[in-house]
Length: 87
Image 1: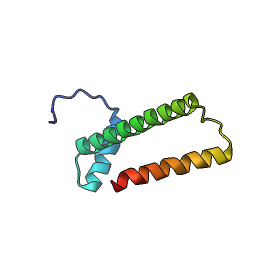
Image 2: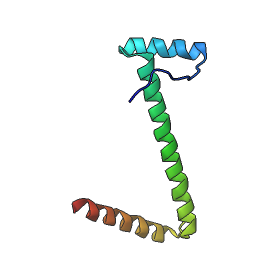
Image 3: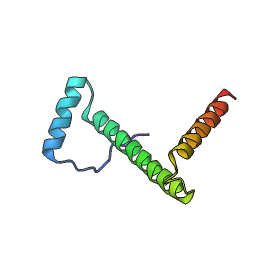
């Protein structure tokens, strides 16, 4: 549920640019801001997941595997993923 008593502060110039873009798109500046925040949050979650993946790669000793080992690992993970998707 959306609330109307938000206290987000935005510089005037940024607010004006957002209002202009929203107007061209037939949307409100609030809609545009909400979409921007959703994208930012999704980006942050993806970055967090990427950092986790890098940490796990190091923990598993896969951060510097030989090329043939890396390819075998990638192929195995892809095969496992495809098998799961078929089920």
